[in-house]
Image (cartoon, rainbow, N blue to C red; front, side, top):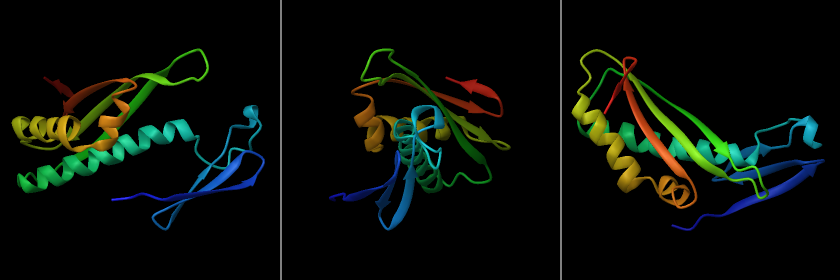
Length: 142
């Protein structure tokens, strides 16, 4: 499956990217010469990572017939100090809430996503250490 993105400069440091018929606005902070009209490009990598894994996880859990849960991902990253500044470590927490969640199925769904299915994780893990953790009802599961 080929991907095509069209990114058009708007003004200043602002760009509009068309992705599958949807628009993503990117801009720099005011301190960096932008007008803060949109997200910064580098954090959008983490958005892509969380979206990719999140879609995998909910799809896999649906196939396992796991229902009645709430789910979010919390990501943060550390950058190198020298240019080009890249993420060297990304922490990705998979946070689930719900009654009687099957720990083994949740663990399996996350594992399949990060080790087999999520192409964004596969690409970014070549450049950064990605640390995955799972929490169910506030408790980390190993």
